Each structure stands twice: as structure tokens, then as C-alpha cells.
Amino acid sequence: MYLDTFDIKSWQKWMPTSLFCGITTNPILAERAGLFYPTINWRSKMTIADELNVKEFHVQIPSCDQEAISFAAQRKDEAENFKLKLVIKVPLTKEGVRLVPELKKMGLSVLMTACYNAKQYIIADAIGADYIAPYYGRMEESGLDAFHHLSQMKDFANYSDNKCKILVASIRCVDQIAKLAAKGHLYFTIAPHIADELVNDDLTIEAVAEFNAAALKVEI
Image (cartoon, rainbow, N blue to C red; front, side, top):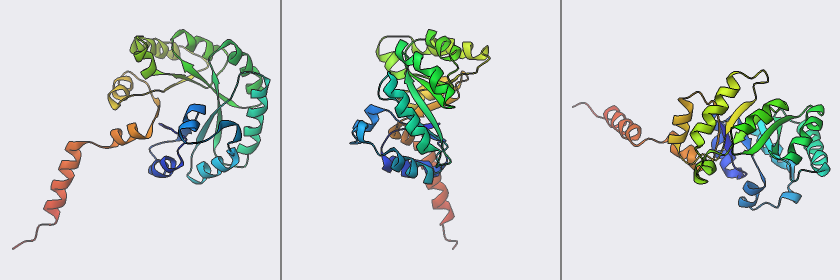
């Protein structure tokens, strides 16, 4: 499980629970958190993540040109001061694909992001990407059969030598996680409000309240 947010308060709330092994970020999440991507102090953010025992920290390149390589190299240098593993997120475009060999030569882990089609798993796996992130909720909202596409991707992964991991993103509700997990999907990145939905169950809360009431009863 990964926490999909750039909100520091959400990191501080959820990472100590050990429910999440990593944090995923991108320029849109940065904007939502009130950050301007070109001026982010990445060392400061990595310091906070490292103090919270984040195992993986996913950072998206800001473009798909040679400036992206410099950006990734800078983040790599910064990450070497911490225990966390840096994963560079690259869009699944022709330009993005061309960057991957150089990123891999640098020893970086790579996630191919903005996936909308099962065929894109073939690309990510062939170029040696460590992860691919299909946008499940957005796929459904675009009229695509998201479940079918992810089922095909899981079949591809079962026969892959590279074993590119499918990190399901754009989750809209816990039922989607349960449906996909039942079919063998193991990796999910979710927003904080989905995390709240995941750990809360009305019947469980009711049962615990009954336990607590019984425990506090006074014998007469």
C-alpha cells in the first residue's frame, strides 16, 4: 500500500500506522498541497518522509526531455542521504519511454505512470520498468472496461521475466480495492480519504463499543 498525497499532515497521520510502505507524489498532488513544483525543496520533503520511516518515495519528472534526466539525478543525489528508496515516475509516452534506459543506467527504480490500456504493460515490462501505474478510476470514468484491462495486465505479469509490478492508482472507493485484490492485484496507491474508508467499518465500531461497555460493567 502507498499513500497518494503531498500533504505532510496526511503523511504524519498515516505513515506511523505501518499500513503504508511508501508515498507517491506528482505535480497535481503538489499543486493541491499548495506547492509550486519547480521550487519544491525535495531534500526537506525527503527528510520528513525518512523520519516517518517511508520505505519508498515516488517522484514524478516534470517533463519528458533531457531536463528530466537532470531532475532525476538531483533527486537521486538527495535521496542517498536517507534510508528511503527513490522511485522516478515517468509518463507512458514515446518521449517518456526514451528516457528510461538512461534512468536505469543511473541505478534508479522507474515507475511508468498514466497508464490507461493493458497494452502499455507490455511496453513498461519490455523496457525494464519496476512499476506501472494504471489509473483505474479514470479508466472507468472514460468509459473503458478498467477491470478487463487490469485482468489482462495481471495475466501479462504472470508470464513476465521482468516482473514489472502493477501499482493500481486512481482508486475511487474501497470496493475497487477489494475487487482487484481478490483477483491477485497486490499493490495500490490511495488517497487519504480512501485510507479512512479502508480502516473504518460501522459494524466493527459498533462491536467494539459493545466490548468496551461490557468491560466497564460493575458487578453488584
